Amino acid sequence: MATKGHLFIISGPSGAGKSSLLSRILKKRPELRYSVSYTTRPPRGDEQDGVDYHFISEDAFRKKIEAGELAEWAEVHGCMYGTSAKYVDEALAAGQDVLLDIDVQGTKRLVVRYPEAISVFITTPNVEELKKRLMKRGTDSSSAAELRLKAAEVEMTQAHLYDHVVVNDDLNQTVSRLETILEKAYLNG
Ligand code: ADP
Ligand code: 5GP
Image (cartoon, helix red, strand yellow):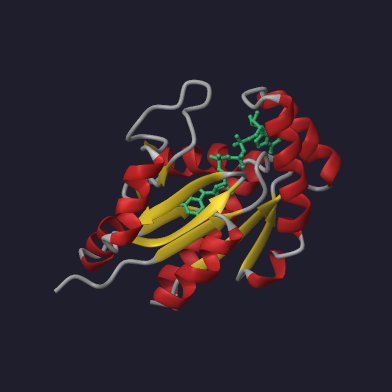
């Protein structure tokens, strides 16, 4: 029987660089499975349905909650986000390693369900840099960016809940640090 896979939770304030980091690591390590979340938020920029998120209506999202299809879910910045229980359970049971990009509330719920999950908090050297990155990305309206910045300040106080905190200063170095965390998890079984 295959060994159970590892579950890696990536969190951090919006704009910290999680998507950039994940797309790099998934290219370098195609054996990793990325859990595509469900969300009620509309697509942003060139995001694709089924790749970045499964974009669904609030009604469809509520049905998933009622049917027990979500391993965790949370309301973030006024929209709902949730993780498919089936996707994660099947991948782990098949011995595959799974990466998730979820918020702090979701992490708290997920570590109850998967106590062996390894959690990594991605942050920026300071709040100014976070502001700069959110502006540079330019895919949020100014009110949405404002909301994300306010939430970021609260989220940054939660970093201590994570197994690892990685400051995403130079992206290449951040990719290497995440790879080191993955390697360490493999060595620990
Ligand atoms: P998140 O997924 O955490 O919301 P993104 O990956 O969308 O963040 O990154 C936000 C912006 O910051 C993007 O424009 C991205 O290109 C940029 N960025 C990501 N990592 C770095 C970095 N280490 N240094 C400078 N800019 C970065
Ligand atoms: P964004 O709208 O910028 O893609 O994501 C906003 C926030 O929602 C980020 O903090 C991201 O980690 C979080 N998020 C994305 N998917 C999920 C999910 O399935 N569950 C939870 N709890 N948070 C999620």
